[in-house]
Length: 406
Image (cartoon, one colour):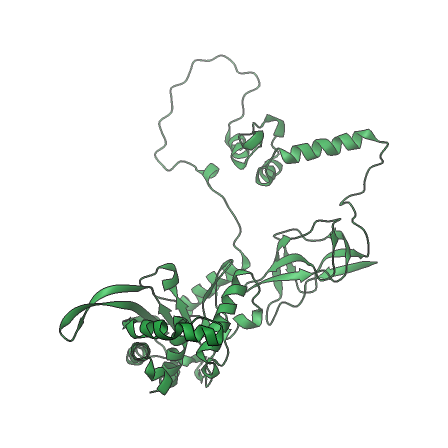
């Protein structure tokens, strides 16, 4: 019995995806609930499991094709044994067998990329000389043949013409270029960044924070913290807590503009940027004001692990009232983060560097981090933005403020 493999619901407002990768080929056997195909949306990647055990009878969409919710990706012959991708030839007919062997040999001596170039441009494989390992034909070999001028069938003797002048413009570099399609996630990121730049009056203010007290706090209590909670005490949870204190004082940074109205959020869903397999993603800590530091560290650690393995759900990436991004993990000294619409504020953290600073009339070396707050100037004035950032600075430089909420 054939069982259809369909595109599952992808989440709120998401109707289409791109076939990223087939884990199985036509004819191969699969177990029930085994991931068969990976779908890429503009937010996350999704593994589509086998609805039944059996063999893959047909594949309807190839990698790179767009699909919509409900489309039939292929069929599985439930309970069936592994079947070949095409109808096998009779054993008594040696010619097809030889042909199959020849085809397999041809596939083995040419890379997939080179084969695609050959097929699209109708090149003669027999005229290609492979320079890859074991004489395998590479993309460069195919492009070299493609760009080589055709030889005349019967060249007539003629005097050698004078060499043409060297071109003054840039020379073609097609043999050193590679064209690939943007992933749905990268396309969506590009769209949202352009949307943010076009629809908001983004301004950025900066400050610096002395990380000495927080670093001493970690050094003193991290071992006990980890023993009790099973997770290390990081900087991010402390910055989330400090940001919440600042958001309570300046609610317009936790708001959004909707037409001619302003929606003030009386809850604190904080987006935390983490590295995924295909770039940065921003999962959300829901009701972060009700979480302990240990709860935050556990959730942020879990977000990071699942982001690298493409296991975050769409709901975990939606919403959010304010975002924190830590470019310091990549070595960034300073940046101007871009808003995550429709939010009106985003905090950028950066790397910690020992710098000379003045303290009580003396020059001392302190661990300093630069902070950046990008905000929507349509709703937030410069005074409030600066004071918001100073509030975060005060909380980090004196961590007892976070405990006493003062």
